[in-house]
Structure formats: structure tokens, C-alpha cells
Figure 1 (cartoon, rainbow over the protein chains, first blue to last red):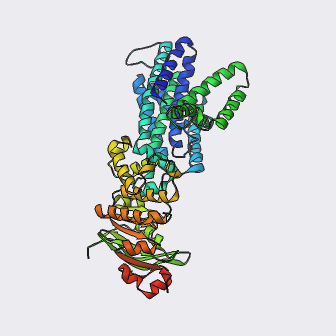
Figure 2 (cartoon, chains in turn green, orange; figure 1 turned 120 degrees about the vertical axis):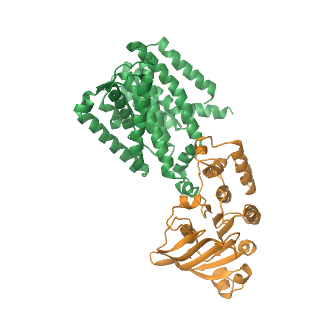
Figure 3 (tube, rainbow over the protein chains, first blue to last red; figure 1 turned 45 degrees about the vertical axis):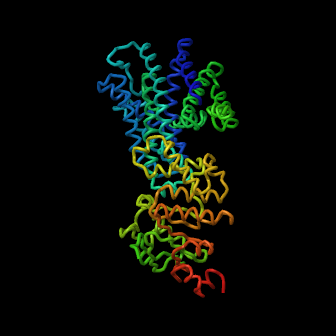
Amino acid sequence: MPTILAAAAVLMLAVLPVAAPWLQFVLTLAIAKGFAALGVAVLLRAGLISIGHAMFFAASAYGVAFLARAGVNDLGLLLILSVLAGALVGAVAGSFLVRYRAIFFAMLNLAVSMVFYALCAKLYGITGGTDGMPVPVPTVFGVVLGEPAFKSVLFYLSLGLMVFVGVAVQRYLNSPLGHALSAVHTNEIRLEYLGIPVWAVLLIAYVISAALAGLGGAIAGFAIGRVVPDFAFWTASGHLVLIAVLGGIGGVPGAFIGALFLELLHSAAVTVTDSWNLIVGMTLIIVIMFMPQGVYGLFARKEASSL
Amino acid sequence: MTRPILEAKGLHVAFNGVKAADDVCIAIHDGEFLAIIGPNGSGKTTLLNICTGYIRPRSGSVLLDGHDITRLSPRAIARRGVARAFQIPQLFSAQRVIDNMMLALAATDGLWSAVRPLETAARRDEAMALLELVGLAGDADRISSTLPEGHRKLLDIAVALALKPRLLLLDEPTSGVSAIERFPLMEALMSALRQRRITALFVEHDMDVVARYASRVLVWNAGNIMAEGRPDEVFSNAQVRQRVVGVA
């Protein structure tokens, strides 16, 4: 996507909540899910579908809640520590999951995430069970803010992180490590014969994808103000895969475009009918059937044809 | 005779009772271009698979510079300077030709380079020089799956050369390459091997190629070495002519 178009899109996102304040929450949540979907999209490059990434989304969100309970009260510190927690969970799970491929990888991710979900729901004394845990409004660099002001700070911080992290992930995908990740999908034998350890390539990608999902989860936790086990439920993982495919895995912006598209579509559909799922479902069928490269494919195609 | 760079001692391999290697001992020395010929299914590719760690022999050992590599993985052996080009080209088919080359070049660089951009001016120039060598410079920006079979074969060889190996194992380098391109390719390949002081072991069915380029020939038949020597010696062996070359 040309830089000018991307900059214009970010600028438009920045001014939207000024014109329609109710959109701020929707957009914050969309960006949060965009980070998690980007994590899923990273693994999709290697042909690996994770139906369990909501676990990392939830792990970091719970991380924020636990750290806040332990007295950590700074937004920056909470974000960094909770993302590290998500990455750590990713390193532990990834160390054995990256040995598997295809349906086995997808199902094992699902199984592990459902164990995590069950623990969150059943360990009432620690996690609050299905009631979840509150995420209080933190300070921002020592400044105490009211909830509305904090939510605005959170939105613009998320927007900034979307650009910064997006560029970093694009750099990773353009590096030998990123190309090796794509190569896993086509020829693992040749990679091994190049002396490149496939397990290391996949584990690094898995940890990065877990950290991205964790970043999304932490932002969602702050935005909603509560963390519940449903963050880790399998439908949430499926939702992330859907966003990644809908947006398109051809480029980093795809995940965010998919998340924004789906959240805005959902917000619009609920105002029209109680059967909003019908509208969302039909739209998804149309997009998947007629836009195999996802919504991002439209922009990528325009870019290619303008060369 | 120079010291052996690669030695296989007492190799035994069998598939469903059929012997692919039966107490085989071979050695390849620095600077040699050793050709292995033999009928289809006689175990030539199996030997390459053993030497690169893809298959483990039932017994016997493979030594690289005197160090036992029998139990090492293909990755570990590749990092010790042994590269391989395959009978069926092993490429990253969804990536561009130049990306295949640059990834191979990056594989030999340090850890830090793994997080820097794959495409640098220096790496692209190096990749283009190798593509020029095998006659694929014009295809650099094509997706590798769109190349004709012969060109895919050439790319597979160029990728192996990009690893800057000390020992190159080639499995039928000229199969799938047109008759017109065959000798120019071999000339370029041999020139590159000599310039870079790369020792090569190649499995080949084209006896003209073997006669012209091999410094030594090893005749493999039913898991055993049937004959060994200079090309002229081997091709004058009546048994070899009858069973392998197909000339009575």
C-alpha cells in the first residue's frame, strides 16, 4: 500500500472519534483485534492456522489485571510487562506446537487455548471465574487521568502503536527470517539443506505472533475495563482467523483493515436488525468468494496496476 | 593423492530387503569431480541422502574431514560446507528466483543479518552473478514456480552454489536440461567449481557428460561398487559397457 494512502488512512482514523465520539471505543477495540489478527496472519505465512491465539490475547489481558492488582499502575509498564507475559506463554506453548503442521497444529492450538480458558473460568479464587477481573484506569507517565481522558489516550496510543508495530512487523517479514517463514510453507527440505533451522524460524514467528496477540489483548483489557474468560474462548480465536483472512495476509495492513471492516460492519448491522449475524455472515461469504486476497487485496491490486 | 574430504565406510542400507548399499566404502578427495553412474534404482541417490544426513545407514559411517557426520541432520551437515542440488529441484516455489538466491546467500551470513532486510545491494549483486553463471539472470524477478523444468534445475544448482560449499553433491545436474543447454551449463558449472575450489560428487546418466567432466568415475550396481577409475578406464571395462552404458 503506498505510504501516502496509508498515512491518509491513519489520519482519517485519528479524526473520526472527533466527529463521532462513539466510534472511539469501536476503533480502539478494532485496532486491538487487528494486532491479534496480525499475529495469526504472521503464522499463516508459513501455512499454519492457529485456532488458539485468543489464549495469548487473554493471557496479556489477565496479565494487566494481575499486575494492576499487584500494584503496578503505569500504562507503559503494564503494556510492556503484559506483552512480555503473552510472549512468554507463546514461547512455552510454541516450543512444542511448532513441531506440528496442518490440522494437527490448528487442533493442538485450539486444545491448549481451551485448557487456558477452562483454567480462567474455573479458578474462581484467582481469576474471578466467569465474573472475570477488573482492569482499573492506570496512570499515564505518572499523570492520573479520568476515564474519558484515559480512553482517548489509549485510542491514540493504539493508533501510534499500530503504525510503529506495523512497520516493525513489515521489516521482520522482509528480513531473511521472514522470507524463511514463508519458505516453510513451500519447502522445508530446502530450508534444512540451506542450514536454516526450521523449528527456530517457526518458534521466533510463534513468539512474535503471541506477543502481537498479547498487545491486542492488553489494549482490549484497558478499553473494556474488565477481563473475562471469554477472551480466550475458541470462538474468539476463530474470530481472529476470520479477521486475518478477511483483511488479507498479503501485507501487514490487511489484519487492521479486516478488523476495522468487521467491527464497523458489526456496529452498523446491530443498529439495523437483531439478526446482525446474518448480515455479517453474508458479507463475509461475499468477501471470501469474490476477494480471495481479502480486502487488502483491493489496495494491493490497485498498487500493482498503477506500476 | 590429496586427503579425503568425504569418506563413507562400510555402509549398509536396505529398503524392504532390497540392498541399496552393501558394505560400501568410498572416498572423495579435495579438488575431485567424482561421477557416480549406474542403473536406475541401484542406490546412487541413497548414497547422497546418507552423505547429507537425510537417511541414516543401518551400519557404517560417513566422515567429513575425518569427523563422523553419520548421525548429523542435513542442516548441521550443510553448515559444515556440504551443499546439495536435487534430482527434483527443491525451490521456494512461491518466491521470486532472486529471493531463492538471496535467502541461500543470507543463510551463510551471521545471526545479525537474519533481522536486516533480505534484499541488499551487495546480496542482490552476488545473487545476480550466480544467476548469470547458470544463465538465469533474465528470470531473476519471476516467481520460481513459473520457470520451465530445465530452468528450475539450474536455479536449484545456483542455490546450492550460493551456500559457498566446500563439497557439492549434484543429483543428475543435466536431467531436464535441453541438449543444447547441457554442455554450456556443465562448462559454466565446472568453471565455477574450479574457481571456487569446490569438490563435487555428481550422479549422472549422461555418459558424454561423465566422460568429458569427471576426474574419476564410480560405477554403482545393486548397492555395490562395480568398477572405479578414470573415465577412459571405466568405459573400456566390458562389464560396465554391457550392464551400465548399454553397449556390448
